[in-house]
Image (cartoon, rainbow, N blue to C red; front, side, top):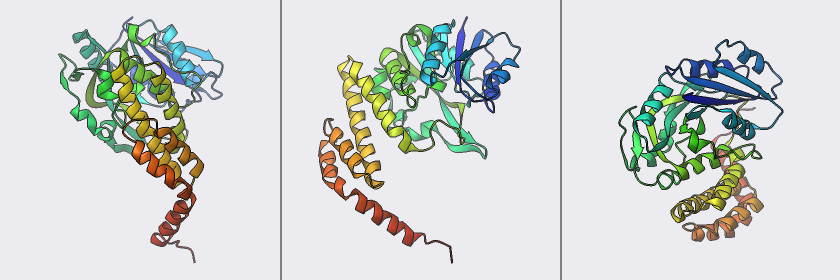
Length: 326
């Protein structure tokens, strides 16, 4: 078996058919699609069951969460390469072909990811994910021998882990199985469980990427999160867990810098939403990390003013954008 594609699904019957179809439409015939139905109460299993292609496998699970479902998929996967797709997303034509071409031409590359674009009921968004990660253009690379991608020179973790908006999402990755299988998704994390997984892959293998957006990420009312604020605590948790087991000093340095910035961003969010205790806690945590200590101390002192600043901001916005009523 060449490729195993792992798709966790929970109540995904409006979308799962498109996801599976986009995989089967790839020009790679030697693959399996493993759908992990995480205790869906809708018609997810029935939709998957309508595929008569023997390459599609369905496993029903008790409600275990997306991290544990992906881990089960890794246990079942028989392919020499592992890919992931979310049940509400899609692959573009040629995605898997190009990734395989790159990997097969570059034996020292352990994983390759692609750019992606978001879409909703109104169509595709203008920006791709790489537009949000301009630092990627500064990463030292060389052209790949095939696939039209770029191979990262030097340490992949150092190159990618410090980028503000991570350019690499798990549903865009193709990973050699011997690298993917030992890495686990934290099963107890409801959100951001893919962050520690991706970072651990960075730390293990050389990476490459394809700049074309070959994955389509759907935004809709049933997404696992709908605002950036919901991801603050899970992201901090994922970064902290990863830092705890890193062994390379260069990796720890990069991740400590990222954690410091993340705590500062959390403090900023809490400060301007009037949550002074949470803001103070975030800035206190940031004091432990290099590069942000002075700023963290200044903002820690300002944290008690958070409710006043939030009220003043709302008042100023009210003047700038008065109500139409009456």
